[in-house]
Amino acid sequence: MGLDDACNTCLVLGLGFPTTPETPPTNPPPAMAAPATSFEPFLTLGLSGECCPLTVTEKGDVNKGGSLHHRHHEELPTSAGAGDLCRPASPDVSPFSSGRVKRERELSSEEVEAEKNSCRVSDEDEDGVNARKKLRLTKEQSALLEESFKQHSTLNPNQKQALATQLSLKPRQVEVWFQNRRARTKLKQTEVDCEFLKRCCETLTNENRRLQKELQELKALKMAYTNIPAATLTMCPSCERTDGDGNRKKPFPMPSQPRFYNHVTNPSAAC
DNA sequence: GAAACTGCTCGGTTTACGTCA
DNA sequence: TCTGACGTAAACCGAGCAGTT
Picture 1: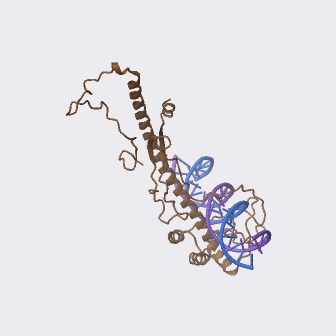
Picture 2: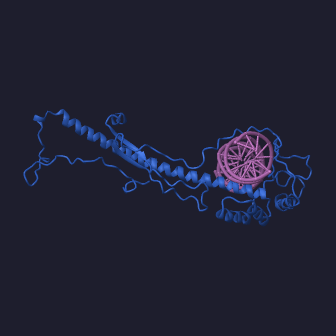
Picture 3: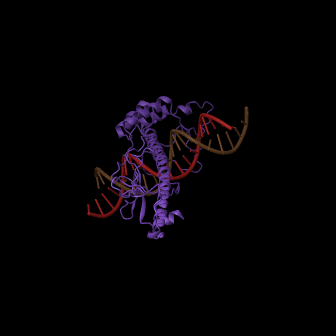
């Protein structure tokens, strides 16, 4: 009801952002989770046609469509498949991957060596039952990977190989770790952004309510003036003040311009 | 210039593992 | 102690893109 009324008043409430917000880097900085302080939404009350349109710039790429993931159970000709860690020595035994075809590849001697070194979990299998064990990186390995990630969120082949050698892991494992790490970073940043926008939305909703209320009051005031015949108008004593020259002052202080509310400069805004 | 190939990243998913009620 | 729910992270898959041949 209130909203409908407000829509007929030629006044417009608008939510806007600066026209050139600093878009976050596609590769988030290592010290992530810095809240996006560079763009600050604002709520305006103004005449229609003057209000800036709502523009929310979406960071990141949008060309990445979701994949359907039809599992075709086919051999991939591509390299870089590391297969599974700690796989049983006997290839005909497949205790894991319920029908799932793993990427196979021929391992070079260095990779075989690295794989041996990386199979610390299976090394703990003393009963010879090689159920699939997922590698858990040690604290030292994770710390070093984190340290490296802080320096570069992506690795070139040389860095990858060096890191793998240093950690006694396969390059593929390092690659996967960085891949997952980037995904986690992005997810976390998205959550931070989401929380930030939620708070903004909350604040702007409150401001919207306040402005709607103000609008209603102004409309009621306007109606009161237009409905009363001018001849019958009498000034209430409290408003009937005069300035020094005996001229009556305006009974109500009306702002000459719409009041634009900027939550950034207004301390009442929490966003 | 077009096509095939390669290598990489990304989004989404699966799954082993750890934790906790 | 056992167990199921749940979260986390390693591993995987398919798609897209850019560079090379």
